[in-house]
Structures are given as C-alpha cells and as structure tokens.
Amino acid sequence: MKKQVIEYAGVPVGIVIPDEDRLKFIAVKYHVHDLDEQRFASPDEVRLAIHDLMTRRHPKPLHA
Image (cartoon, rainbow, N blue to C red; front, side):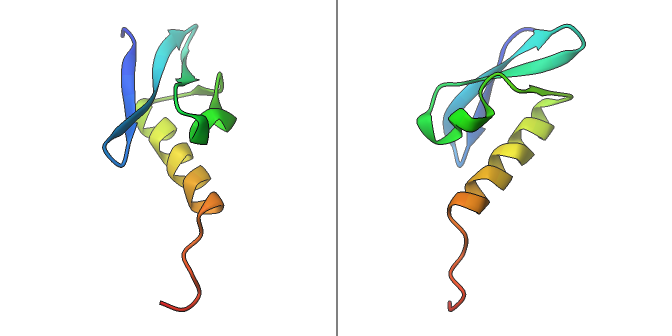
C-alpha cells in the first residue's frame, strides 16, 4: 500500500502511510492534529478515530 488520503465530511484531513505492519496517520488539518503520527490497523480505523475525536469536541446539543 502507498499513501492514502483520509477524508472527513468530504474534506481531506490527512494521509496514512505504511509504517512497519501498521499505518501512520499524518494530519494536514489542525482539528485532527491530536491523531498525528498515531498508528492504526486500517484506513477505516483512522476514520473511526477521527469521527470519535470530532464527536467529543463537538457533542450534539441535549435539546434538539
């Protein structure tokens, strides 16, 4: 596998690159920088981590 662009909500937020037997995430947007250089098993795992990070930062209001 070569590098792969990772998008969140249709916006490129980083790339993953092979690193030994894992994928290293390189953030290119500030709002996902907390995940920069972390290693994941798959691109889907990266997307889930981004989703979890964004949900924690911007929780849904209690009253909709």
